[in-house]
Length: 283
Image (cartoon, rainbow, N blue to C red; front, side, top):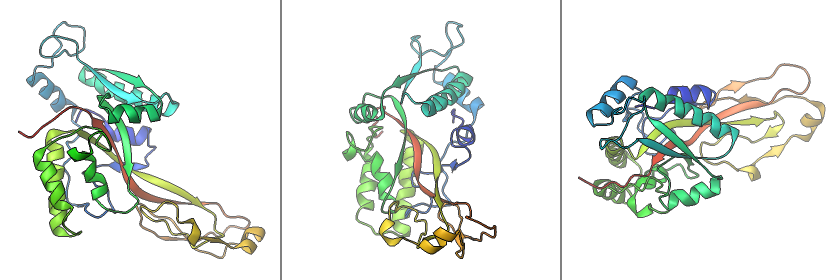
């Protein structure tokens, strides 16, 4: 609610993402296009909620304090790269609008992985993809049995765990999707994640590559591809290429003389979310 995800998409992702509505991204079994559990970006309501629960500026320095009067500072994992520094600035901007200090734990990615698994990061923006197109790949990220492994938020909720175990025994279909929707509602209520965005993946393909079709989750199907060596040598373009969004395709023909430009294909392979490592339990 307090972080400007549309700004993140516009600036950091360069428009190559859409706002996430649930843990399971589009084109993955279990995603419900009618479901939206995300809290909308609303600075005024975020400020009001912070005031209501005692996170106020008590000493007049312009920054909010904890209900007991101690300074209130968030901590977020971040790599020492220019790209992550750009994202850090966006987080600083959003938190400043709320009157919240935020510091960044700068470590290399492998070290952040170790720290996240050990519960030594309060927050960390991280992404996830699937290679088998199943919603389970994303819902398992909040199952308490995976704390110390893939559950970086260290979320523990008895109702969620029970629903997750039930979902493992049901094939893809309306019944399992309904369970995933209930689990998504729990995620929205307890907020171990800031859902973030579904990101696009762009692939550039020369027209003389044969057999290439962008798959929504399979990244390396190279053994099924071939090259038209003659077309590559002469620059002849006798093929139709596809350009689509989140796995969809549409025909696009190159009519220009000489070697045609590469073509971008897009897919939505995963979700980029913020894991908040705060111990939680069922009510």
